[in-house]
Image 1 (spheres, rainbow, N blue to C red):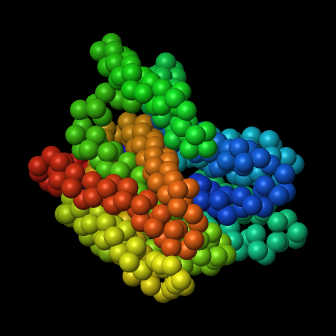
Image 2 (image 1 turned 30 degrees about the vertical axis):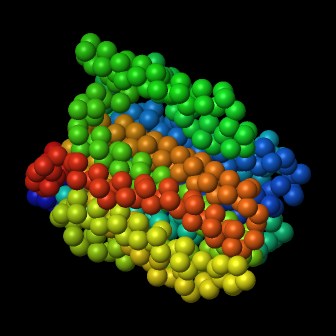
Length: 482
């Protein structure tokens, strides 16, 4: 049950929040930390390019495909139970990754990690209303933004440190094994401080809807992940086009079940919730720009300018500092002026990507790492400013029994956006290098080409947030605890 401002504050709620943030951090970091270890993995297993790519891709694919059904299972069986189970599965998967004897074993263990991530992550946002009264939720959601920003930047830094230290001669394996003690602590803290949230025992699971949604998502995500490596054959575009009728069939099926009073995977009421629909689009646009941005920037720093993974991660740290500063301010603002804050955050992110090309080295120049501090600091403040009110608006008016599925769907849109951004920006970046060489100036120009996509997505966030219904702020204040 959601808490109101009149309820007595829940003891240990911030410790419980820390457990949720740790799980979210582990999931997001595991997407980025593996990139640093790719050369080590290829050498250790004598793996092909395709096998190494699947070490990264299979986690994203499994995670995104299962978010919706796992969110619904949280509504059915209880969010704390599903969260704890997910952390356990993720931790076991991490241990198996760290002990993998072959590249095939590592890929299989990454699938298990993806399953665990999909089980625990939809529950994190859904548990927040049970821990905090409305006046505290702004800070709580801001901390999720901070976690996302820190994970995206600290993943490469932590990966570089662990691999460089070669702890006990384990080489790359500690990047996965470090999750084991962290996961155990998260489980113990959750069992102690998160209330036992009962599920809706009578809620049925829409298995047909699960199958249709999984197939539609697969038709989107597989081409985006594999298309560039395969050379964009015709059948890849056929899969992308096939996702459209499958989405239509999914919507029809959900409406059909609603008309018969049966449970839906994605409740039809969410389709009629303009805040949820517009907010989900904004989340997808925001996260289309962020992962691809760091992907091409890391390549420019390491391959184009010769920085080590650790140096590259440290160079991007101002972004995390910006997220931290903005998240602190977001917590003080609570639920006030959410649309203005989202729009401002989008504009700050646009400013960041427009400034970067002017500080990148040209022909014969050396990278000045200090010149990146201001643009990245501004970008981090933009993300921290936008993400807290965005999640708050999207989930504020969702019915209590549907928050798990709504949270899972929201994060599915987030993953689709991330895969889209990686695919498009990777194509723009590598496409330019393929035509024009690989000098320092070429890498800088390739970055400029790729950043046009981030500029577009961040500008969409700044503009389309004003399409939220009028009077949304009053609704948010009055119904956030409904």
